[in-house]
Length: 394
Image (cartoon, rainbow, N blue to C red; front, side, top):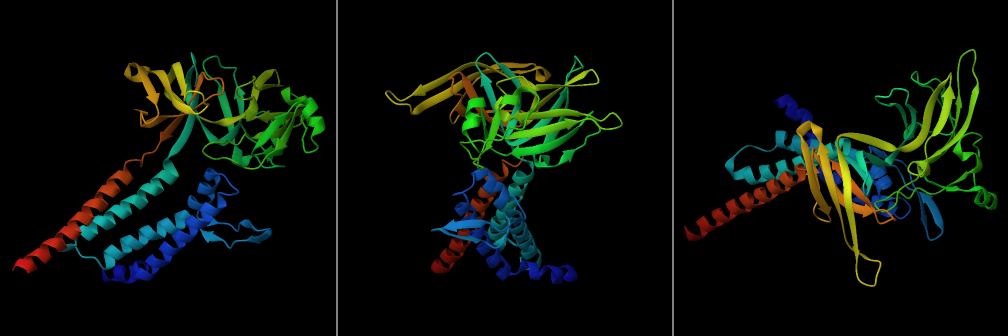
């Protein structure tokens, strides 16, 4: 035990605690400043859900400079957790008099653990449903994927998904499950699609497709603006080519999330077999389905300001013989199968609801943590008060 304490003593230092708290303050300030130029999701991933924050280009009153690299949220949070645990092993002793401090520190440790669980395991999805429509999947609007679908099996589609992180300009992607290779000519994280006449008037428009629906269309790259209100709309130009002795080029296709809900995927035929090609947000398929019965959108009289919007849905789950109607509205979410459905928005047609679907296995940890900290403070100050009163009236 003495050897362990000797090893952990530097990690339990109060100086390290102060340095980590200061580093956390700097990181929060830098992350808040970065939201001037970046969306909140991008900042959260780059600053708080990373180990190292790379140098950033900052503009201030016409001057441009680069910030030094910073420790990310995972490094600071992880070291805080180690610091607290090491302090308990080295310095703190069990006893009734220190029960309040132990509860407070245990609550803080649980809070840090909860943040780590949320960082690595929480998933935020979005489910768009129109009146009369039934869906059995939600999508992560921050993670695009290029999918090649083999619909030849009448029982189910065979889907090969290439995550957006692999869609790098000039990269050739080979997958043994595919009869062709995919070369990424251009990939835009955020974009807008232009028609033939619009493309001619825009010198920045990119038109590379020679096959599929996008032959006469063009794309313009836009800044990364993903946040809670806006969503990046990726677009890519990909060239498909078979390999081997009879290698041949199949064409360059334009794929975009713009097309996902508006038109059928492009079709590519190889050796008599047809595949579907599309760029869409990552899908999470469910064992249950959601049917939108009615969407209600109320506004304040004489304005376009939303007053209230709600979704009356029918939840169907054959696994548990579940079939019931549920009303989801602001501050009244649906909790089912470990997921929470929030009413977050609506479509422009007024008949489409947007539900935010959150799965977070660590969602309960902050509540327990705050309860432990509050209880610890009551115990700690209560013991001191009792000791003071005993001395006062002794």
